[in-house]
Each structure stands twice: as C-alpha cells, then as structure tokens.
Image (cartoon, rainbow, N blue to C red; front, side):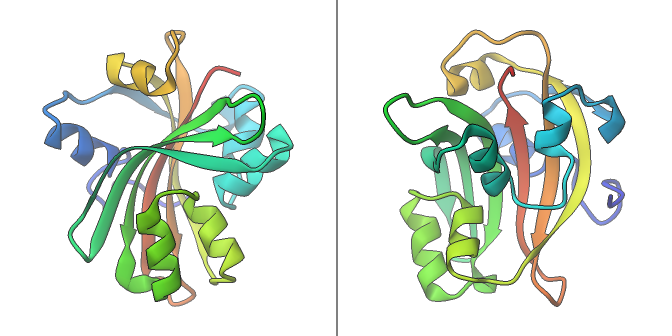
Length: 184
C-alpha cells in the first residue's frame, strides 16, 4: 500500500476538496490497517482491483451510478456519486468521490465519464483500457449529515472505506478515489 502522506494532498482527497468547495467541514476519520477492517468490509475493500467489479460480484448484479454532484474544467472531472445495484430493488452500495484526469482516457471513455451513467471501473473494463490500482489507505469514518443524506438512510456511528488511485501502465494517474461503504 502506498504511503498516503507522500506526494498527495491527503487520504480523503478528493472528498476533502469537494466538501471544502461546498463549505462543509472535514470529516472525523481514523486511518486503519486492512487487518482492522471487519468482514465483509475487508473482503470488499482490501484488494488491488476496482470496486465496481468487487461490488457486482458481491451483490450479484450490475452496478449503476447516481451522480450527486460533478464539475468539469476540461482537464479534471470531479464527481460525488452513490453506486447502486440495478434491478427491481435498488440498493446503495457505495458513496464515492472521484477526481478523473480526462487526458489519460480515450475520447469514448471521456464521453462515458461525463455522461455519468456508469462507474469508472465499468468504463475502463468495457473499454479494455489498461490500468492498475494503488491503494493509499483504509479508514473508519463517522458519517456526517451529508454522507447520511447521500446514502438516504440513518447510518451507525462508524463506516469503513478506502482511498485508491487508478494509474496507467506508465504510472500516470487516471483517478483518485475515496470509497465509503454503507453498513453491512
């Protein structure tokens, strides 16, 4: 796992940046080791792959995006999303904040990202775009009203998440992601 303190603006980036832009305070969280993640969070978070595939396998259904907020300066694309199961019963399975470097993607993938209908993992996998994940760290977090509202539910005092970086074969950053899971 990469050292989150090196060459990076913080473990919860880009979530911290997005919250600051909305005038929200920082979140109360603690960095933890993967061994401190209780199940099923350890199985869902402690891996070197994309979360979309892991969540689809766990929930046995495809995953879609409900975009909460987004901004695009033509170079970097930022969005806060809820990933949800598809099907007759829609269930929130992840709250995420992502910063995507559009220049690292082919135009068809850029168009799909900006359309906001599919998770980045799905876009990369369907487009056969080579990438790897570099975990920056794991955390437990006390959800504030904004995160509880995003999930659309009352949540317990502690949730678990990870900070991840998706990179190209030449180690160029495609995306920085914060992923928080709802209660198991």
